[in-house]
Amino acid sequence: MRSAQRKARIIDKNRKQVRVKLLLSTLPIILILIIIGIFKFGIKYWTSTDKISVSYPNSQGHIGVTVMDPKFGEMTTLIIPGETQVEVARGYGTLRIKNVLALAKNEKVGGDLLPETVTQNLLLPVFLWSQSDFENAINGRIFGIIKFVLFPVSTNIPFADRVAMSMFLLRTKSSNKEIIDLGKSQFLVKETLNDGQKGFVLNGKISSRISALFTDTKIAESKLKVTINDATNSYKVSELIGGIMETLGGKVVAVNKQPFIGSDCLVEGGDSRIVKNVSLLLHCTRRTKGNNDELIITLDGMFVKRF
Image 1 (spheres, helix red, strand yellow):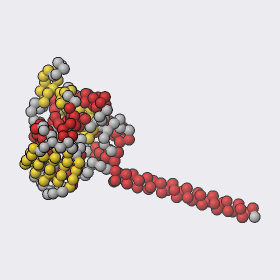
Image 2 (cartoon, one colour; image 1 turned 180 degrees about the vertical axis):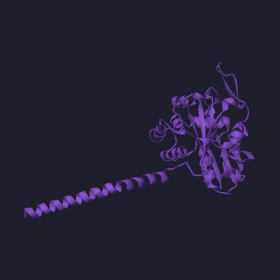
Image 3 (cartoon, one colour; image 1 turned 120 degrees about the vertical axis):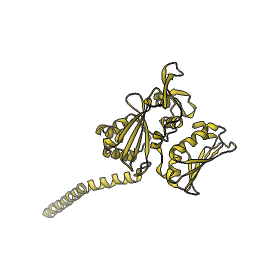
Image 4 (cartoon, rainbow, N blue to C red; image 1 turned 60 degrees about the vertical axis):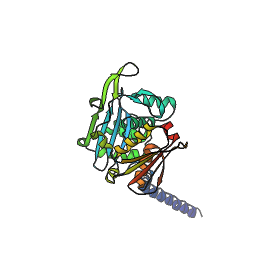
């Protein structure tokens, strides 16, 4: 009897050992499959063909805007001097651009205020932002990349997108990276600012060479015709949106003034990718309908209050 019990215990122990060994041997495969699943289905913005831009403060007190082009394996970083005077988005007045994120924190409105301010002042389409972790990541520092992916201070870039961006940053050659200091361009001029101290102010439109970095190839190739239905009672808003769309490569064919309704904004068009990208940029509702080479942007009263 005891022999049979002992034999049963040995068999049971052996079975447990087999199960443990099987689990240990398959665990790496399970983890890889989980990571692939998260990566594949968790990516929200990154694609293998579309340009994508990120705004962030750098360690010198300036604002960087990095454009990554996965199609050609190129990366360009614009440096906006921190002492540049801008009109802050959402009607928060005039500030030096280096202070926008601090204002966003104090007002508890989120870091989106930085890319919105960049877009409205420079007409450069960007909606992603990160804290200075991103600067270390684009410099190819492995610990900076790890921190950006796993322990970012604050950002609106999802985890899977941070992984995809980091993989791009690691494989991009130094020869394919460029830095453009706008403080050394004719686009910014030095003068006394509203606070009585010296700084930079915007001096007309940014050069076509720089705006071309943000052009959406598909929008440009399709010769996208853009119609703006404007119910904001503000000519400036539709003019800014038109400028942003032209930077992306579209052509504004009509601006229709409409009565104030009190809603927000809507982006409609036949190409779902273009509709998605423009709606993300403007934080609008989107609807896929119509022709692929046409885009209709309807702006209303709520939009002008947050733009």
